[in-house]
Length: 191
Ligand code: GRF
Image: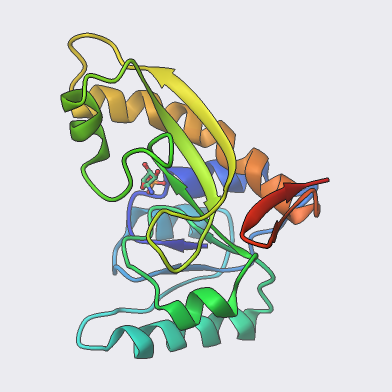
């Protein structure tokens, strides 16, 4: 699992691990990320690989080497705030997933909740998707929606979306880990 911060999705994935997947390594690009403590509390090996002063390719190669040394089979991005190089993404094609706090393909990128409120949307939500080189553009594996309430702030909406993320991500990872979904010809194919 790759993280950069709080690690609430990491926590929910830890809680649901066991039957279909095991978390063998947590890597943060940010020292002191709260998620590192959550990994530690669950006895999951965790490490920091700082990105400062490195090219994207050098940083990604270090992450890739750590994942392969650990024997990782899948790579799960959970609040990982770095764009990964095309080379890294291709190297893990079909085995690399992310969660994004919008109903993709709407509202890719950052400041999602601000833009959803400005856009006067009635619904928002979360999407788990395969990662492809184009940002937040990979085929969707699973989505969950929530209402946007009048008077919502980016914070209140973010909390509501996060609530469904914590259920959605373990479900989507379970599908992938048990070969019930795969990336084929640019599509998420279910069996
Ligand atoms: C989540 O909202 C996720 O959708 C986005 O980053 C946030 C990470 O939160 N990609 P956490 O670190 O898992 O608590």
